[in-house]
Amino acid sequence: MKILRLPLCALTGLILVLGFGHSQAQDIHFTLHRMTPLAFNPATTGGFYGSYRISALYRDQYRSVAGNGGFKTPTFSIDVPVIRGFKKTDWVGVGMFFYSDKSGTGGLKQSAFKVSAAYHLALNKKGTSTLAIGYQTGSVQREITDPTKLLFEDQILQGGDPSMNETLEQLDMDKKGFLDHVGGLKFTSKYNKTDEFYIGISAAKFGKPDWSLLTKGGQYRVDPRAYAEIGMTTLLSKKVKFSPNITYQKIMGNPASSLVIQGMLDLNYDPEKEIVLRGGLGYRSGANIGDAIQIMLGADIKDIRVMLGYDVNISSLTSASGTFGAVELAAQYIGKIYKRPNPDPVIFCPRF
Image 1 (cartoon, one colour):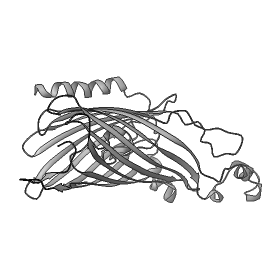
Image 2: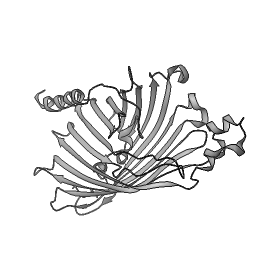
Image 3: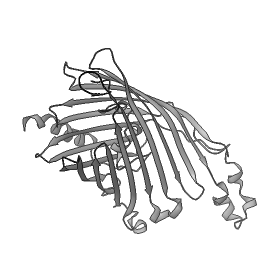
Image 4: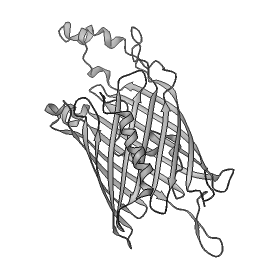
């Protein structure tokens, strides 16, 4: 039990530091955030045991409130540990990440394509403790795909006549975008074959670019985003593993923030067939009692992981949503390419 004291104290400390103050929904977020690792911290790039990792996730939010105008967000990423670093226990990972977020009657669409790289520095001879330093860059764009479906105040005042819509005439029909830069750090320490502790931070969207979709009369500055994550994995019995995790997002210079606390249990259901069943609960902060209770279910079948996430809405929107917040479906595959030296085959992975 002594081995758990530092991670548990760190988890508790983060809760106390971040607090449960007034929080608001902001920026892109996922219930199954660990299934899309490159979305928030580039230091996770190449941070796995294998030759390559493919991750995909789809989120559908507030369909019960807005119908087809709800949030629809697919993501895709692939990352690879490519070469060893300056030491035999160091390695370098590279990857790419894509997402598209579409919502509203007019089809407001935000999308991004980014590339990332991370250097994983071993802090001891065995390589059981590492510090990853990551950088990510790419284009972030948004546009209104069907502006004719939008209804503005000036149009309503003119009896709904579309020809009198002065605001629509001021919309920029071209894509609006900027080049995003993301920096991140992640510390990971493995105590044995089953237990580990990790903590990471990242920051994105520097420079406060103007992202307004109006050709005149308005500005919308994008504020920098800070992200922090802390968690651990520990074996409770021969078949059960427990993984608590806390994430926090903050828009700088803005009251909007988000705190998520999750706990996952893994059951080693069939060791011979390499089948692991997974389930957990989470809480996402928000005004008053919070934004959502999260339910997560899934399974590992050899190198494939599939997960289903469901948000039970508990905010003031429940009267319209009927507690249905969002549903997510995610899949991840870690491939292993083998090379065959004499005498035994080994996995092609720069770490080993």
